Length: 190
Image (cartoon, rainbow, N blue to C red):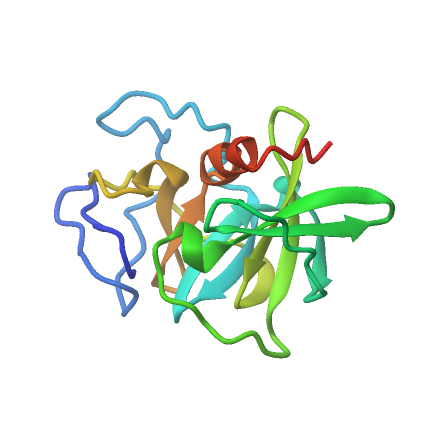
């Protein structure tokens, strides 16, 4: 996956971006070597899968309020580079961030597949996340999410690495991914 070190805590785990890799050995308690996970993401839950720059990411479905077609974004001066501006969602002002910029990827061209996910954060704020495309709502392959290792600039925003149809999927932590950007942006998103 672009921009991420996909070293996994699992013994013998492969590194790389996708490709055929066997699913994990089966269910486990998700505790891993680093103790229990505290991100509130269930390994057996449903996820909205999305694509950015050829890689696949996922967000727990319970965090997604809605998926919007791309619409005009009101740009505001002096905002963080990943913050695009604001959109109106049924009378609510919602700040929107560009997932490509948050992940440190280059600019991409918007097209008919570009979408904005409206996400709810754990503190009650709401934020939009522009992505190249949304694939589907699906469960990941059997087995626990594996913790990524690394100290890249946005590794804290990855809750775990799972697999869908054998390919790697980075499950994003919406609070860590968007929380700082929204605070810097100064919009309440409530």
